[in-house]
Image (tube, rainbow, N blue to C red):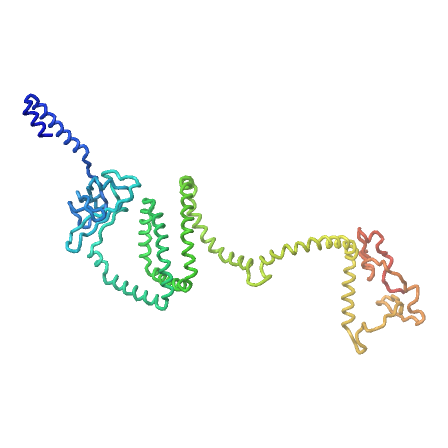
Length: 464
């Protein structure tokens, strides 16, 4: 094309300036197109816990290929390393989920470091240029001297004890160890899912780590108790290892339990705002709760023996010896009472007149019992006084002013009328004694006895 233009210029001198102008325009257009179409590199800021001896100009690699460089190494306000990098446009942009790790170039250099980028899949959202990739997606290099610094005498002694303890632990338990090793990959897979759930909310996980640090410090303050706990845990672990089948079944159930627990917590998250409102509203009403609980503590301490006694009252070893057993038997007892109580109530109602009639005769009955007792107790050469044959109307009584005199009747007059009477079946209470001066005997009440149920004339007296 250039040769053709020259030949044309030679043949047509008047067209030479026009051809030069066209060529210049084409060159300018090509330069502008190259400038416009040239892609700019992608720049990001990475946050590491330690810069790991990175310096400006170190290489940024993706899959071992150099794709960029470190442009700046700085320090954040919270003492974190901030590394600015630049990546070629053909290898960017990065997508959310990409991670970065500081690695060593090899063993030949002390400070030879590079940034290894592990890109996330392209279907994930794009990370904007100049965005910050935080520490949860970055990993600092661990220097060999850091590793050696951790192996101080105390750590080496503990590690040696751990190795010896592990040898004692697995001694004679090779089959159990192999069975545990087979299940270990499955457990790691499930633990990875658990870790993903834990890191889903970075803010909450950060608070969890802070609280865990505080709890660890509290445990360090109670190392003696923790040592005892570890000893007891060793015994518990030994018991668990003796039953690996149950432990395996429990581990198989853990993923399902965790998934259900995750769903439950996800459903609970929607209720947290309402719970916060409830907490805010209850603050004013709970200001007196602490003094109340302080006063309640001694009450509960004193009530503990009472509750123990109540427990024994309701639950005792054995059958039919506590209140719970009585309550179990109560339904059958109630069924019996449903049948027996009506009959008993009817019997009591029908016997009430009998008891009402016999109640006034109680004193006569007691008098007879006491008199019989005294008569049967005394005895002489002939035996007890009651060992005799009763003969009615065998004597006559005459009062001569000195206490009275009994005169025997002739045998043919003993037991005959008028002194001896028959059919005295309606005697009133108190007729077995002489009539007192106040007229209280024989006894007649305003009830059945006053209705001719007894005859006051039927008395027991000595005839003269």
